[in-house]
Image (cartoon, rainbow, N blue to C red; front, side, top):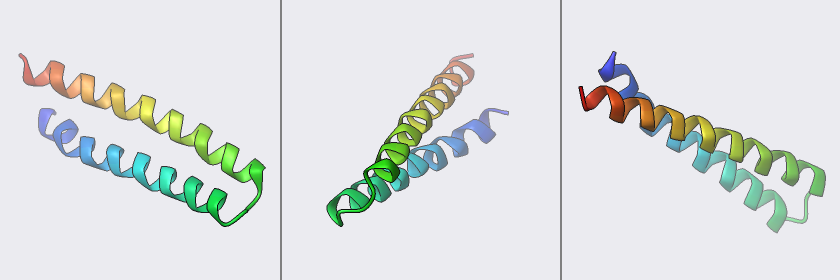
Amino acid sequence: MTTFFYYLVPVALGAVAIVLLLGLVNMMRGGSANTSQKLMRLRVLFQFVALVIIMITLALLGR
């Protein structure tokens, strides 16, 4: 189980980075402000999920 979370951490961080870049690109191109806002909210959600995964992984590794 620890191995699963250990490999899930980079996936979660990559998802955060991709959504962040999509939001920034949309803003820089002058895209819809509504789309940028949705992407930034999604980024915050992904950051929360990534943080939870990291904390679970650290807890499992500490056992």
